[in-house]
Length: 461
Image (cartoon, rainbow, N blue to C red; front, top):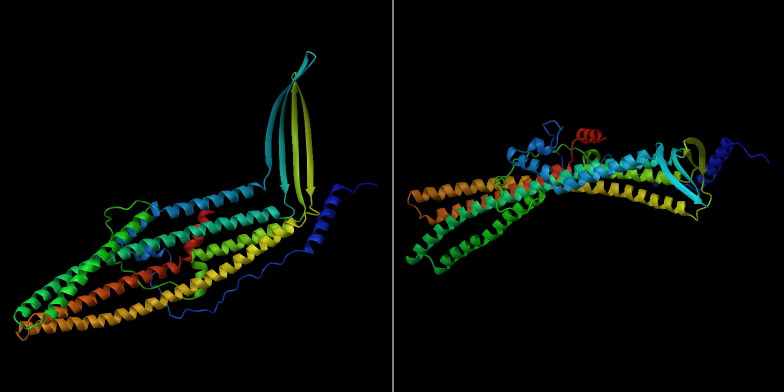
């Protein structure tokens, strides 16, 4: 029987693998679906500034943006994320190199002696190989490594967002603690004056000892708050030191004032998060990588071809003999006890997990953004009520001071009104700091401009 020519045999082998493989190909899981008509429960303000740069470059003043620059220069988490991206880039290059030709050089020497006679020889050779990716498996593997690299690039941007958020929250905590301490000083001075006047009135028989004890208890209550406030400032400084990759410092010259962050957010609908939030883009890239790996597992069942060749030079007594060999290798697994089928099932499960996690993370991001929008709106209303109440406290203080200056009353009601006004100032500080923390988290949740993310990815590629 005459053997069929090689091209015919390869074609028959390929056709057989397609017929046998297609009967048992696992179906891809359904891709995640996102509700394009979804909307936030609170309307967002349109930004008057073009959305072209990171929000901290646009909205922060010099006192805070300088610390952001220091963060980018020395933050350990950013260095790790950057190294992980370079590692993914190296894996992509290695996968692309597997598609190209291979050339190896070999050399050796031998000595053979028998009954006093000996021979010597030197061999030199070159081996070459060229994979022929007729199944597309290697190309699918390269595609998977490419998406993994993009995933690492997006994770770097997400890490940048998170570290800036942590830094600005720590600066906010520090500024709030310092201003609270200043307000405590003012309140304490006012309360001590009030105690002094109460003690005078007690000696005159105008008040009881209970009034004196109440004033002393208020002083003690204010003094009790100092350790807590100073601890909050110290913990904030230590947090900043850790973010900068440095041990705790005795005194960091952190801003003592709250940043004036604009309330606008360049985000209108939840669907925009899919293109703005680096964490979600990383999940999207991870889903594409899982899909490419699933495709690679499917194509592993198809025939594999490789073209190889070698040349050998034998150098003996000045004579050179050359031997050249070439081969076209083809392989097809006919039975592997279900190993490839199990690998396909495993990668399909990973693909399904990636898709479900992508959808779940988007829903979480939408919920978090909506919660922050509602929190900002609530704090705006609380600040409005606080301004009204502080205005009334200011009017009451001015009225009691006027009565004292006219000799209608003594100074004690003036101090009482002043203490109430200072208490409202403390509440204003608390609400302003909480609103700033909410805005920082909200701007982080809104992500980065789409053009900026696409530009960063193109630069790395």
